[in-house]
Image 1: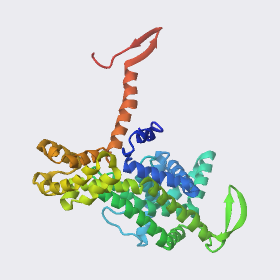
Image 2: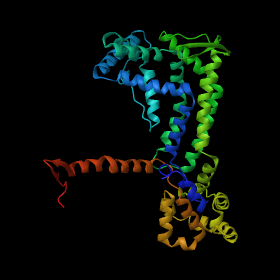
Image 3: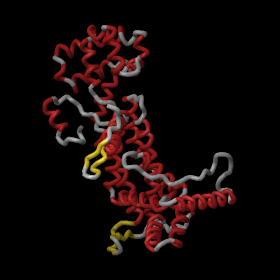
Image 4: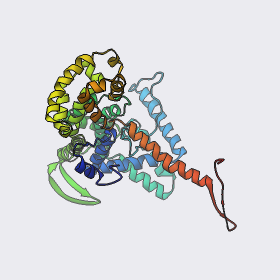
Length: 413
């Protein structure tokens, strides 16, 4: 609803300031990474070129076959010079992967697949450049020039490294049964890991890229030379920094800083704190350590209007009784989430005994789920609403025939 009607969130917040909006974490991560990729111009151009490269090479079955032949020849050569080992299940023929706009993990697969078969992909572009029409030759030549440039290879490896760090978080956020506390800790650790990569891994990345280029006869610029900015085909004045500084500051640091900035903006401390405190009521977390102080802090900071001052004092006492009489109950050990806990409290009558605790549980239940389950449900409903409905309407209505409007029902009634 927030995406469909601008201003709705503000209207709800004006009437009820403690109705919190929690966006789907996977969707939020996707928005953060897409925004970060568009913020830095070289990175945005890289993904545009990557899509173009995949489309050119995968445009026909004949090019698929040419790619397979090129891979087979490369694998045979690498085995002959003992650079790779042969064996069952090793050295499988693969293909380039297309990146999807709504699934960030597909970007990692696309980048990784291109690195894996970089040389065979270049060979296919050379073949296109020789035996096709003039327009196709121009496209193949331009793509080849972009693909074999040092800047493209540099960003290709940079994106693989950073996306591998974030992909673990992406996969965990999509798990069906998700521990909110673990997910929030993983968000924090991912930010720290990316920051550490920015601070310590520049030399390793540059060495890896240089080695990759040298093996494939790609020109490596003199990193100590002065950087000359190019716009289109025009050459501008030399800048006051070197080529290495350009790649490190304008691409490496700018890309990672953009990702960190978007992650901090999308995963705010306020939202993270709300969910961490709310997770104290989760039966799985409560069995390990029932955090009474966190629950009291949750009420005082996020739901102050839902409890009177007297009820806030009584809540701590009630939580201590709840800890000994409910958390230690044998049936409580079988509960796996807050929803099951709420139903169990109602069915056993304990919701009336621990009314204040039950009220906190109900408030926490108003927070949407944090994994991709709801997003998948909305996507499925969108398919039903559009594609299936249009198909039914096409089967139901025939249109005009000989001046008569004819129709046929696709059902019996």
